[in-house]
Image 1 (cartoon, helix red, strand yellow):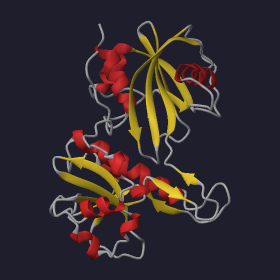
Image 2: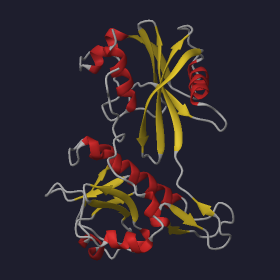
Image 3: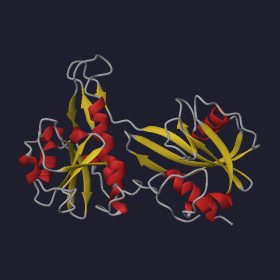
Image 4: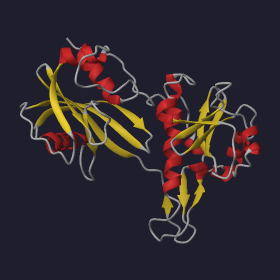
Length: 298
């Protein structure tokens, strides 16, 4: 199988998790002249468009009066320490905001670095949605260099969570099944996908989602690769499987539509040929990697 790396799946950082609880050491890293900082506003990243810059020096902390306790330590790469923080709405900025989905194809960073963005965005989104304790409802505070929230009231410790979701390349001979989500834009189709339930294996989740959405029984399920998807914090798990038949029974509460497409037609659409009634995901999505692999197989 050709090595294909989904967007966000490559992260060169040494996360130095053993040092996250050492506040003095992290502050030392933060004050190092070579340290670099990413700035987020929800799923937007802030950039200096004129200088094509998305990584900023420690001077940015003074410029926006950032509370250092709310800065997340990401890790070390090539003698540089990486951090991320969310900009408070009260801070006025001349920097541009670009949606992360759009930013990743603008070549500010090499693809080998994009996993850093997924890491930063996911944990910052988690902080935004976990300001209160799920155990007692009181306010929580950031600790462990941004990798935990503690509740001073009940002493409960909260750790960042990732939601696993399977996305499936489903084939029957020379055909594959593609579907359109209820919120997809017009004509856009992709591989079927769904979240993993509690107490469920990845293989069983893939078979269950296929049957629930399309009424198809699957078998020979195998894992291929995964993709961190920071919207807000999902791990997309790429699977492939075979279908026992091509008969469909679509649940329109789950998906808007689905149909079988021959490999030659999938390849033609991926190659940019026009005149088809459907479009496929671009290179940002793991579904594109799954389809690319399949059409290249002999």
